[in-house]
Image (cartoon, rainbow, N blue to C red; front, side):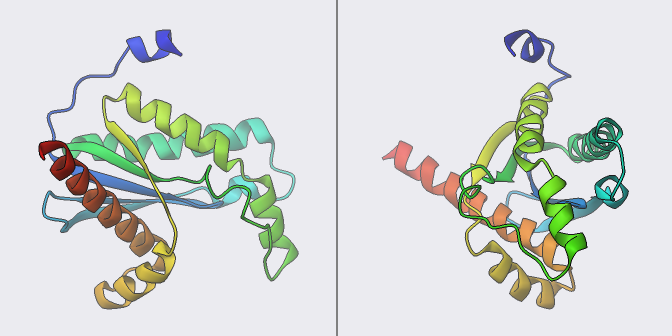
Length: 178
């Protein structure tokens, strides 16, 4: 891992924040400025890779290539700090459920901890500051924000997670100063 991180990809001279919301069939990214205003939002779809009978090796390559495109977009928007939902902390609490066999299969085949670890390492390799944010109640707050801004619930959930991360960073900076 040290050798992987030694070969960093460029440097980051940015001032913006990005947040990623990872689901079994998509990854949503929201880019915010230092005041918390949304600059850009993108969605990478990989719904075909969780279909029944799709090879796992090809599925992983498809997911990784789509998420890597989001990292390059974030770098183009001068993002310096990225936030991820701390999916590892809620892994034990989450129960795979759904209304249909298709949704249950998508959730069970999706390797969220492997993808999160890969995204953290890839973010460090791109010289981003990486933070994990507690995702509790961000979907509920995201629905309210989404109705007001006209966004879907996953993009607005990423926006709510980013606002929580920015506020946590501000509190951390204030406690270090005092």
